[in-house]
Amino acid sequence: AQSVTQLDSQVPVFEEAPVELRCNYSSSVSVYLFWYVQYPNQGLQLLLKYLSGSTLVKGINGFEAEFNKSQTSFHLRKPSVHISDTAEYFCAVSLQTGANNLFFGTGTRLTVIP
Amino acid sequence: ETGVTQTPRHLVMGMTNKKSLKCEQHLGHNAMYWYKQSAKKPLELMFVYNFKEQTENNSVPSRFSPECPNSSHLFLHLHTLQPEDSALYLCASSLGDGLNTEAFFGQGTRLTVV
Image (tube, rainbow over all chains, first blue to last red; front, side, top):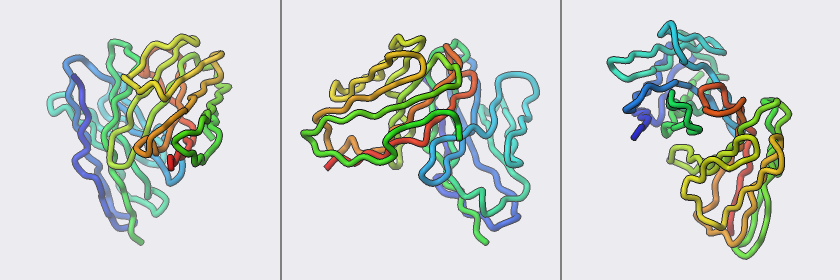
């Protein structure tokens, strides 16, 4: 079975400070990894994804994430956050077997404080 | 604007009512999905359609009935719902088999069952 763990349900951070949102997963098969963002009253928008190749992935809005296979992690980082980054962030995995299922974590609420 | 449109955005219904949620995409995608998002819980995959055929039903109660008349449209028919069915229902689409390509989400329908 596969699972995604986002240990931090809420992360407050001051504007222009760096932030890291943690994501760990478990799976018996290889996975693809995603980070989605959800702004209030909106659906989910893809921030970035790891399919193969370089383990450091750059996404939209200045976010990046690093795939660490040995630690089964895919943490999301941004060196300097803005007020507009306040949102819910979801880590997700899908199996490389091609099954039609995207497994989500419970989400991390990022609040940027002015 | 993700290219996936859901209507209505908000819906309040009684437990004896019958209503339908609609999802539409014109991205040329062949796979469509229904997800349920409840507070404090991971997103739950409900149904998957590939090329109009249902390929996954994630043990969803029969009071939820999906319909996919073509690759661009997906419906979720609701009848005799319970208050615990109140949630944000998200529709998503992707190119085809497997979510290892990007999934595009609609803005969701906020459903309240009274």
